Image (cartoon, rainbow, N blue to C red; front, side, top):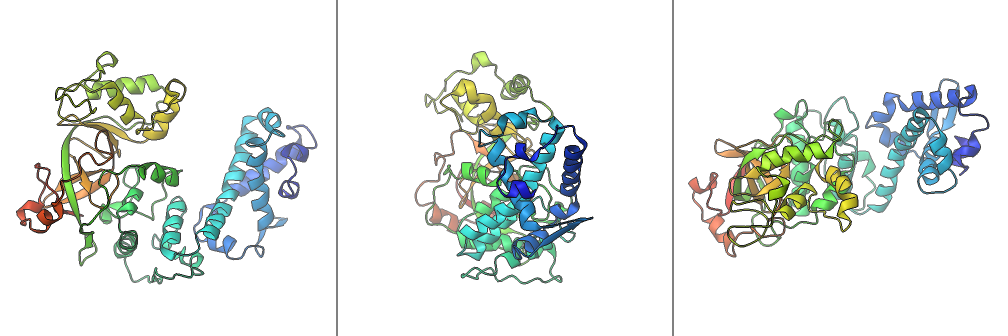
Length: 439
């Protein structure tokens, strides 16, 4: 580790054959060290980051500065991924040794990544807290409230202390998580935080939370949350402007938002799973069945002459289907990159068709009878499930043909919402914006 932390190439650290007892033994120690639950706990971030340079790791007879362990793990990708010096050496290693070293690098660099971002995001506690919550979704805490309380020490040095949260274990999880989500909504003047409603099945215990509140306590999350949010931020399904922002009910459960009904979902595929079905051709065949077409009929035809690629029935155009499959990320070199783009945009999602012919992709919990909505403050459409006089958030969606404001309400919609009767706030199919309640 000391040689690696000083910038030495991994191949120079190997002074014997890759099957020598010394080398194999060293990797076994590293593998066991990286498998310790300490690395998965949330509280270790404060221990490692706030006391940088003062933390000593003790593992049996091995005593080493934590900074040395982090530096040696972080240096590995610079050699075998970005440099020419060790690529051939890396590929000559047995696969189990590659896995061990990759795990070593990923585990140690995750702490350094948090430290580096915190050094960049200095001004605002809200932004720092949101970043940390997203970055630590896969870390564990015995008490789910500690998924928030355990991060407060990392934002104390911000010159703009606006979070105003103090550890209070008399406060239940629902009120804490909902209150934090509302802080993000009010600070950002948007529903951007809803993007953290992950495209995953509901986590154990999440049923006690309102559907719109991110379950920060869950030990799952996208491995690339920032990339997903970056891609979704490229859309503008409901352009920003004057309008009534969400309001929270007194019991912290119902979120009142302005929504516009788009259409009802009629057909849904099973969730795409790359790990279980790596055969892209088989997956596309299943999608053909859902969409009710085959490749020979994926033509650019619209009975209303719009050629927009979605809505109002008719055949599904080839371009619309492929843009949906790729999340609108159609590459110029489509033949070479189509499969890679497909899995990047679609893994873990379902595809659906609506009554009027829209096609889209969304969270795995989506089912026939759910509805596509535009929500004021959200850049992307959402899938909602009617529940008596309210709705439950299933998750965000990509819907071909409405991602760039095509279905935005007409000017003057604000007055119509404000003057709507109580009955108007239930789900309706006339496309007028209404106040709806997410529970």
